[in-house]
Length: 186
Image 1: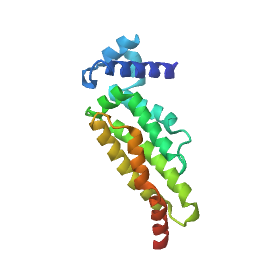
Image 2 (image 1 turned 60 degrees about the horizontal axis):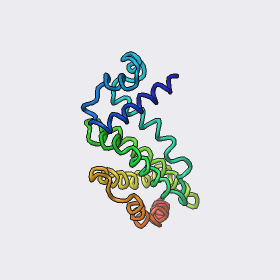
Image 3 (image 1 turned 90 degrees about the vertical axis):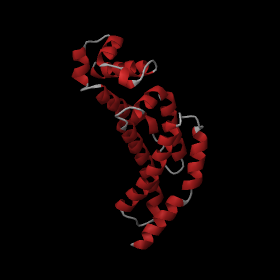
Image 4 (image 1 turned 180 degrees about the horizontal axis):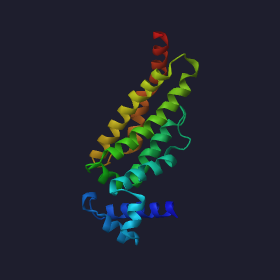
């Protein structure tokens, strides 16, 4: 029952965000829309921002699935874009709120996991430390998330496939080159 209530509150928040901005939504609005009492809300969440964080964390697991390999990373990024577009009211309201760090943390974590798995797979043929692999994944993570945040700030208008293709041009062969160069340093 607990997960069902959390999911219902999350759905209510997403629905309300289609009608008004985040800073205009109250706990009262949520519990009335969801037909639960305030105690029920506070049993599960400290405040609306706690609910936002729960939404990003709980939905993150299903986004990437097994699309975290050198052959499938583009589909993994497409899945992230699809999620952002599918939840555009939620994403844009979070982006423009005081607690935008929930969205940023979500993007950084998803992107890092995707990229680290790609780097780790490519590193099989190289003797590279975990710290160096993490550094490479971090480098590309910050670039990707910066591009996505810029895309969100511009209203999510550009086609994700165009962005992914540009990322492919930038990344193709460069992770392998970085692994090779890090191996030579040690």
